[in-house]
Length: 77
Image (tube, rainbow, N blue to C red):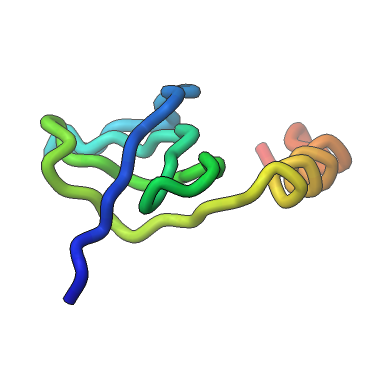
């Protein structure tokens, strides 16, 4: 299996942290030297391992932002 190369080009923020210290983060990540994408996944404290996550290109991220802007978060509390 080929090795996956990645570079976190911009750390946008941490959404949460679990008891083991893994953090759910939103970052811009370049996978295999490609153009960076928005990336949402959990990372080990030393970033030596990662969980499965999702990547979004800029158009998909804008579409997600627009959907979330329409959502009434106060109604869910």
